View 1 (cartoon, rainbow, N blue to C red):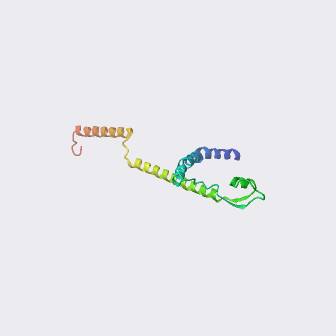
View 2: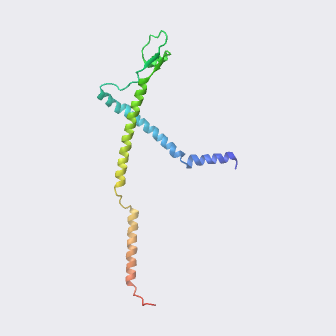
View 3: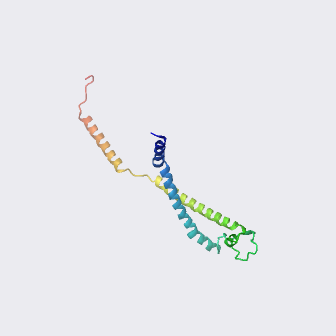
Length: 161
């Protein structure tokens, strides 16, 4: 077997039989879950927070102009100043992303706690015997009763016989 064939065989074993498939599934599910949580924050939590605070918690348009392009008379927005070649310290975007991260982390924490609580209640509930276990118990009991009947029907043996 050549080195290339051995290498391909090793790779196939790694990719198919190893943890690579499990890891790939985890990454795909994680990406989908991330989109769900991101939507939860943007579409459900942030509107409620904005309503409670009486305004927008979006600081992404807050910035400090470090260098304004010569002769710039356009709109004083982050995107337009950057497009014109200006230098901008975008502290508001960082604050917005930080707030979103904290909310996202808190929501994930609550979800993990809820899942852990649900699992602990499921684990605490005693599971009834399965059908297999019930049948095996019946078979054991029948064998024990048959064995007890056989020992009662046999006459006692004389010592030394």
